[in-house]
Length: 310
Image (cartoon, rainbow, N blue to C red; front, side, top):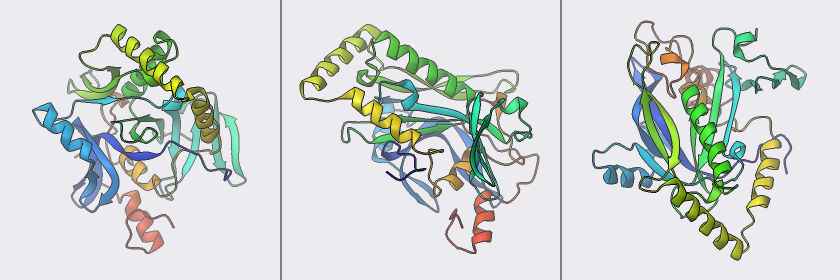
């Protein structure tokens, strides 16, 4: 195994509640009130929708996806949802520091170092809102690929807090059968004084609609017995995933980072959103937009390929 390369679950597509849009010639993040499921292919018009997206929109009736039936791959909640404080260098697009509020892994001139992490509020390096929570949730949609997942990325406190709590609670109440439960991602809204009473959307995780928790646990037990009968080893899968994540300092590969920074870590000219808990920031019209990270990288590399790292 290549050292320094995080081995993460296979990705079939993306789940988002926002998008990057063109505004006055600039690409800026904008929040939405619905889920979008895309493939991993991106064109100049944006990410190409995954076939699941069209099917769920038709099933919704109103054309908006507000819930997605899912399962998780692992019994360990921390393997399904990874969340840390993250900071990126907006000039190069590379991660600078990743921490959990106790310790961090920071890229320095002498390499990666482990240092104390005081959280963004108490960190000199993080001044100016450059460091924020960053979560990645992997879920399975459909039964075509037992190990393939869709990834939902977020910098929203509300989503990270809700998803972490739900995963932990469902693992406990099901008797460590989290990976066998029939679950559902749901889009919820809330408003606060800091959001000026406008809705802030976040992602929650529940048992599927029409199923009680008790029925969900019964189904999980049945699924677990069926898997064990054919030799499915959930404990070994979790252990393998744990080793794979620990093999690298950061989940994402270099080619993914420019898009992630552009969408989830916009610069100071973009309003970071209501109450610091938006999962995708809304566009501020009060300040002119600065060149995006993608444009800076393109200029530096002298390439016509969008977002390519030098």
